[in-house]
Length: 285
Ligand SMILES: Nc1ncnc2c1ncn2[C@@H]1O[C@H](COP(=O)(O)OP(=O)(O)O)[C@@H](O)[C@H]1O
Ligand SMILES: [Mg+2]
Image (cartoon, rainbow, N blue to C red; front, top):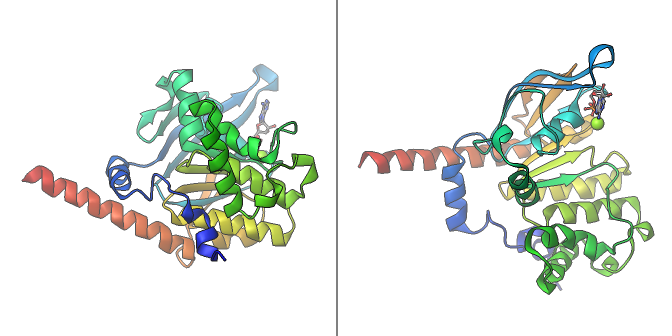
């Protein structure tokens, strides 16, 4: 019988769990993973113009679990789309892992999106004509071409999420909670270091929400960065920081120091500081 931890996503080798790569990652990411300065996003022109983001500044370090809250229409989805390189800002500067997003050619952007970023949407966005396992393997096929190993990997992730018996089902045969777990499995297929989740539990009951939040917590503990839009204040207990948006800007930005997630984030932050110090000492020698 497998234990919970063997069954968990920790069992899947990730870039973070490979110590050599992890060390290199920490050093190269001493600067923030997400750095937005004066971000503007306008839709339409003239009288019909909507200002979705109005000079937004936001800096996120690797290993943070950020909850984004705010009324409908305040720009949360627009912000995630820009961070995930699905959309371009009208103005301002965006650096993703120190790379200037505006200067990235579209092919390079697609690659980064596929390999470094995992999206989870409220409506799951599964492809209805593909089986569960093919949905999960799809990002691997996009980035690495067809290979039976992708099916093996997809199967491993699905097993970790308790969906082994549903691999050859079609999405319409699943419950909402199962569909969202498939969507998470798909988001994790390429072992992204940034997870962008837009109201991931918005369509789920409390039991399924808890399953999803526990998975996000595991992913966070691996050292990954999570940004999650939510309307549910109860979910703040899973985050290390909460950002309240209003009219396309950050209204309030609060570190949730009493939460477990904050301890996880601090651990990664202090390790990063140490590695920075080690680097500095090495340079001085
Ligand atoms: N593709 C679009 N075309 C025109 N207006 C848009 C588009 N996407 C978003 N908007 C507008 O931008 C504002 C912010 O939208 P959105 O980011 O979806 O808000 P939220 O996710 O916080 O509800 C809203 O006024 C919305 O109507
Ligand atoms: Mg939205």
